[in-house]
Amino acid sequence: MNTLLDVKDLVVEYPSKRFRAEPFRALKGVSIDIGPGETVGLVGESGSGKTTLGRAVLGLAPVTKGEMRYNGRDISHLHRRERRSLSSEIQVVFQDPYSSLNPSLTIEQILAEPLTASGTPAAAARSRIRDLLERVGLPAAAKDRLPREFSGGQRQRIAIARALALDPKLIVCDEPVSALDLSTQARVLDLFIDIQERTGVAYLFISHDLAVVRHISHRVAVMYHGEIVETGDGDQVTARPEHPYTQRLFLAAPVPNPDAQEKRRTARRELMAQQAAL
Image (cartoon, rainbow, N blue to C red):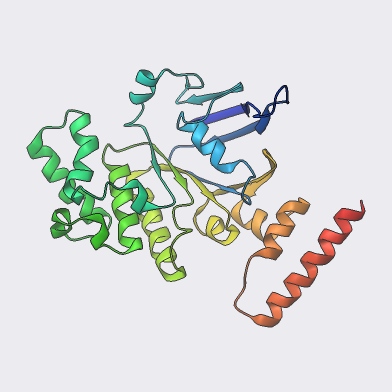
């Protein structure tokens, strides 16, 4: 399989606020690759570095060392104007769709922004907006409404439609379902899968939820303290975790059966005690 995104030995550091203190290293030599049409799930708890990696891919976090290549092109240190030229290729869907949608604009205006910026003629843009709304399961009449008139799941569909406007090859999905209830999560995840099957878009899918990552990902990478500690296909990493941190994540995931949940809690406590004793 060809490589769409290839990240090698990536280091991201931020200056410390304390005088003469060592910089904070958010990523410690991370390597990961994504093929065309592939979903790679990036899972870890808060502070693990997964969002920093996504921001680095988007050009929003500084690259201290290492390199990132997109379709063979080094994108590690692009200037802002060069980065803008990649906007049709690499897009993002954030965790909170409401904060990423301008509340004063109609849905048509929101979806028209990337199209207008790319020079799409007005008539073609209107046709494209109708197609985008249909693609994410919203009626054409939605174009005349404001973001606040939609539910959380519908707003996320609008955010996905905007990300798809320029037919990107890669979308960075940063916790895109964590703010949604379980039933809405499932529908939005199925939408991501359906869109990928129809368009061939690739996803870097960031989540703290191992069950969500397993549902959507071809491969899974587990992040812990700025490093990738385990990788493999979804079943391997989520059902047969090898690294102690992945095992803790698996045991922390909720299950509907109360007795099974209590057994998981007990097993997790025992595992943490064993690791602390080492």
